[in-house]
Image: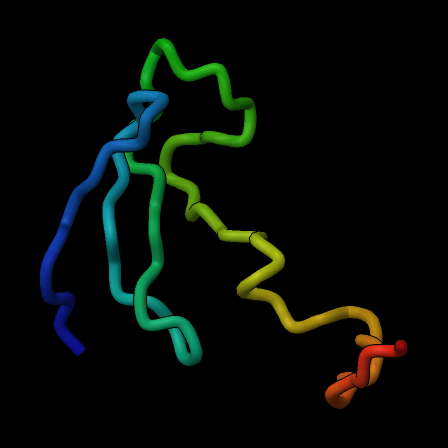
Length: 75
């Protein structure tokens, strides 16, 4: 699979990203190509992949309440 589109990017902190072909289940790997001297994010290290831990992308780790059906107003 060949990557199409962007090859490099820049974060707001100034760090430079590169995009590489990923592994099975993840088509693209985002790498921190070069850490900016002004970057204050301790987790940014040159040459390491960046991962997205947002809850919206993860599978839920707890049971969700059952979905409620429609309700009627009282009164």
